[in-house]
Amino acid sequence: MPPNTTAPRANSRGRVLFASVIGTSIEFYDFYIYATAAVLVFPTLFFPHAANPTVALLQSFGAFGAAFIGRPLGSILFGHLGDRIGRKGTLVGSLLTMGLATFLIGCLPGAGTPGWAFLAPALLVLLRFCQGIGLGGEWSGAALLATENAPAGRRAIYGTFPQLGAPIGFIVANVFFLVVSKTMAPEFFATWGWRFPFLASAVLVLVGLYVRLQLVESNTFSRVKSEGHVASMPLAVTVRRHWRPLTLGTFNMLATYVIFYLLTAFLLTYGTAVDSIDKARAAAEKAGKPFDPEKFTPGLGFAKDDFLVMLIIGVIFFGICVVISGPLAERHGRRRTLIGVSLAIAVYGALWVPLFGLGQFAGIMAGIIIGFILMGLTYGPMGALLPEMFPTNVRYTGSAVSYNLASILGAAVAPFIAVALWSLADGSPLLVGLYLTGAALITLVSLVLTAETRDSAYEENLAG
Image 1 (cartoon, rainbow, N blue to C red):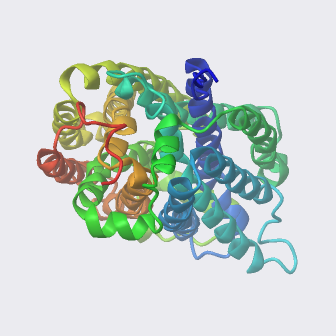
Image 2 (image 1 turned 180 degrees about the horizontal axis):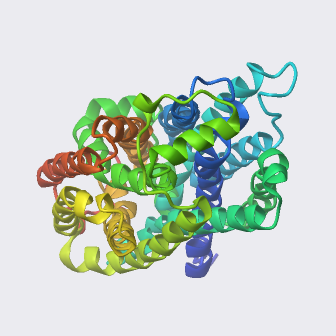
């Protein structure tokens, strides 16, 4: 009999890159439509009984933060499945979890509906938590899909494709919101129009599922399975044997999360808050609510739609710099590239007063663009760095847990801390910027302690 020369099936380059970017784009689209609605709609829709608009906003951010509690749990669940049964099926499960939760949010009645005063906010928090579970397993699987199918010397470049899901999802979600808000009466948008982006996610999820079901398992994981190196308890192995990269990976992502959620969730709040006490008083009187001048915190006074457009422009630079960051990380190494960007973020945080505090359009727009440029340069290399820090048999769990633990430290609390610092400084962004600088310095120390991973034996690193 002739020898068996059949090569293992492999995913084509185009299929790998498209599947990694479309999945994360859908997941981040789902995530960001909630972030936008949390600022623009949910405070009045689900928390109408709050004492004042600031309290309603904080309650809305509290529901927003529920996802960041779910994300580490999702990383444990889907990381276990990804390291035990494979990447492909796990990616399908994470996408379904996220998509179903998003669709159901679009079906919720408001808290003002009779009988739903407490149930509607509770279900919102629960579904937001489920969104976090899904996203907790999505990113790492997409990053592994890209990097484990990448040719030698191009892992950082392939690793930027799942990272592109963040800017693509943000742009699509917010353009959708702009279109529905511009084409509908404000009253209809507040009650029904905001639901359309959530319900439309069902169509996007079907597209993502179709693409991912065409994939085959990566040869890297198949080799681990065939040689008997699959970890029976990936989380236990990761914590016991790989606690150092788990810790460093978490803090390597800290500044990335802080800068992004300050640029989106916080800046959208700060940028659209009224800029004078007279306007705030008039708005409270129009809404029939008491006005307390002691609790007034001035913002920049932009119209919500106008500021969303400004953020979308900034996110375009985010996407461009994600693409640029891949070749930089291949040429100079992941560690050196990220150390330089983290230093730049620390300086950028110290400049928030001249950029955002003077109320000048040119400075504000420049601050948004510079921030998103730095975001792209720090986020792009993470698609390669975090997976490279762990051996193949616990790579899904290790990269997912560190990525999502960072989401709690750097994203879940960021809007709360930023709003508190903004109020403490009487409307100045000084303390918010210094908060970003502090996060960047912590990440800088973590990166200094992290070994370079560019030349790591990615496929041969099996047993850990």
